[in-house]
Amino acid sequence: QVQLVESGGGLVQPGGSLRLSCALSGSIFRINTMGWYRQGPGKERDLVATITTRGSTSYAESAKGRFTISRNTAANMMYLQMTSLKPEDTAVYYCYAYDGRNFWGQGTQVTVSS
Image (tube, rainbow, N blue to C red; front, side, top):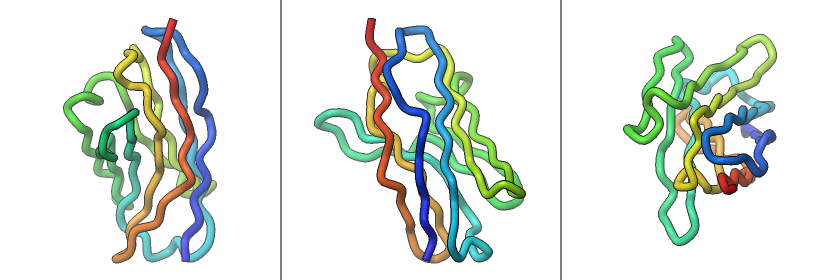
């Protein structure tokens, strides 16, 4: 099993920045892909960004140029740096890991509002 715990969410004004963190523990040696999803009010859960164990990254169109996914392998951490935030970025953000099975964190709320 893999455990994931997100942190770093909160309230931020439009145009602001926020960094989300995800701490991974458990049987992480089989993980080959990690990433972030988000679920806005009344919306489905959508992919935001992914990163592989080789460091390859991919982003949703809405995140390109504004969000950066990264990881610290030694610390078993993953991050999502978000800049130029918009009200439509408001959502619960979930980190996930995949090793043939999907594992999810509990989510952290990000609210972009003035």
